[in-house]
Amino acid sequence: MRRSIMTFGSIGAALFVMTLAVTTNIANAQQKPVRVLVGLAPGGAAELVARLYTETLRVSLKQPFIIENRAGASGLIAMDALRAAPADGSVLLFAPNGGITLISQTFKNPRFDPFKDVVPIAMVGVVEVVLVVNASVKVNATAELVALAKADAQFRNFGSAPGTIPHLSATLFADAAGIDLVHIPYKGAGQVIVDILGGVLFASVVTAGEGVQHQRSGKVRILATFGAKRSPLMPAVPTMTEAGFPVEAAGWFGFYAPAATPTDVVERLGRALVAASTAPDVRERLMQAGIEPVGKMGSEVAEIMRADYANWTRAIRLAKLQPQD
Image (tube, rainbow, N blue to C red; front, side):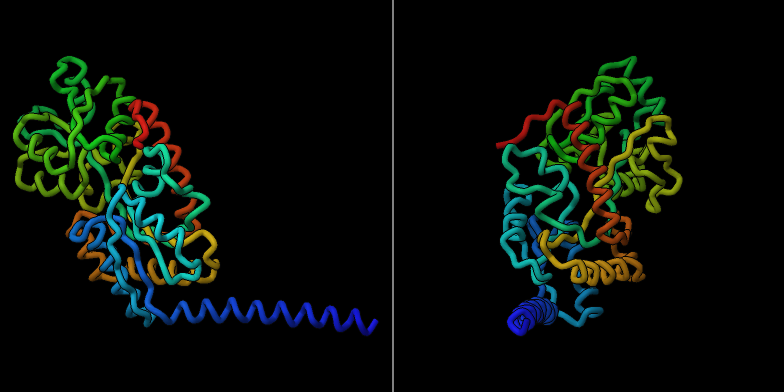
């Protein structure tokens, strides 16, 4: 009996020591600098959003946050670094949804599973995509453009970088509208905008920030947004669903941690990020960049990720997109 008591006591002591060690490691991780991996080159919209939020976290959590750009392989280099990092909240990933739920389907060997290898901490900003036409095109509604495209083949061309959210959003729209759009591949969004402004392309799908900027100058007209609701950047513009075409698609930014990160660590960071999304200076700067400030906790983001994944799966099939090596 005494041996049993001693055995159980020894087990209890061992469990206590193990729990204390884990708790101590997490506490230590919450004191040292947090590395935030960004899988894109410096200077873009992603880095702007990441820096806005990490600076707010530095103040609210009283902890240093350091941005590390790990550009390359469409974000997979940053993802590899996250997967190799300790699961204690000391290394995070900041990424667009295209780098999580889309890229995992557009590469033959993406090297990660978006539902097993990472855990979402929070969604912090939405980048809507919109249908635009050159201002010379005599249409004011999406249905009018569809009718024009069905009658005249020159209005069926659209351009985008292959496998991107604008490309796949346009593909979903074409399916809903019953038109055979002709995809013209571009290396990047910049040249797409140039060709829309120059009349080489009559219509295409671009980000909201690009659309709003050039609509203000009178060079393009935004017909619809692909969001689930109207965008605060352009409240007068209807959604695709309102226009009669039940299509939803959007880009968004989020923070992620390695999958085994303790729930309390993830939720602590998530609460701080959601609170930061309500800060007036953060909201103002994001809106100026064409990004809608959003604060959603990781549990809600996980559900959005699954819907996103299914949406892109269907779009990839419709576009007959072949996975990259």
